[in-house]
Image 1: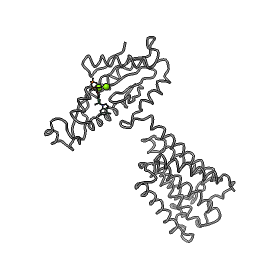
Image 2: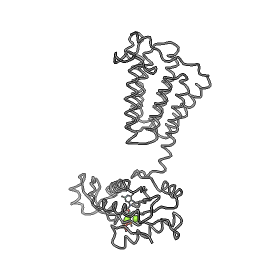
Image 3: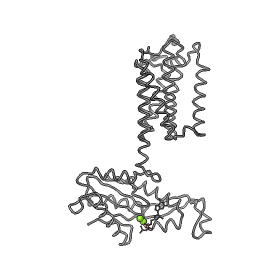
Image 4: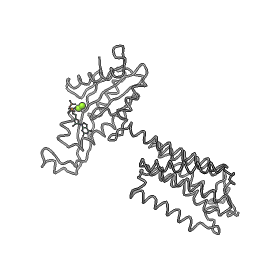
Length: 375
Ligand code: GH3
Ligand code: MG
Ligand code: MG
């Protein structure tokens, strides 16, 4: 079987305006990625531009090996991007990534030769060397990458991870269907949208706990139906807690309490209202129906040992804590909760919140670590 003769699908002549628009989109998305510290998007755009250029060059009848190398490498790079942290385009971490990209380009230019079409050779002789217009090596790389990215998305359903997966789908279309430039431009647009979306989402997310923030809560409250309950959750004696263990330990405990709250059952959704106060919204449920789920939360928080690292310079009892500094501590914390529902007396979300706040206050006065229903 002479695989050296394998060629990319012949490309229909794409109007010059499309190519230029593609470059415009690439430049725009790259600049946005630079501006907003989304190096992964910038990296993906550079790869897509390279894919487009090399296909143009290849369809002019050059070696298939360079194109195949690129087609094997691109999905792998996308999968690695999906699994790694974002970076700034212009930074040490960025320089490292660009060096890796340049090294790959150098390796392809150096080793891919028409005389040694190793990459186009079938991996399994029993199967057709080319399926859907793609050689086996490319198919394998694509399958592994798509699987890795789908798994990543399952655990981290974020815009950029999703954008990379969709963009890779568009790349497959670009390789197998005529009109490459259209699909590559679409892939870059998808990444641009993902970038805008992930940046926009920052404003709605709390940086410390990862819970949706106050702004997201306000958005939710605007779109509730006729039946809902809102709970206010406040940590007990948290000021003392901070004084005793330090603000950093306090932050860790807030994160752990938030993790518990985010797992609330019964269709509730937790938000960080501000400071050490959280809200839980139950759409479609009254306060009575929501109460058992809140009670479950309260109990699980009270029962938990919050394991924290204690780096803090102590304010009190320096000797005792110094011995533990840098060590692991197990701490206890409780929460008080007030919950109220929409009713004739409280027909608006802000009134329901106020009623929940009053109920919370009654929980505090009654001795804390309890759930109180608003009247
Ligand atoms: P109560 O049981 O009545 O709620 O007492 P409290 O001390 O929790 O009440 P108060 O509202 O007076 O104090 C809240 C404290 O929460 C003040 C501040 O030290 C702490 N706090 C608020 N936001 C944060 C935060 O983001 N991180 C940390 N570590 N502490 C916070
Ligand atoms: Mg408070
Ligand atoms: Mg408090």
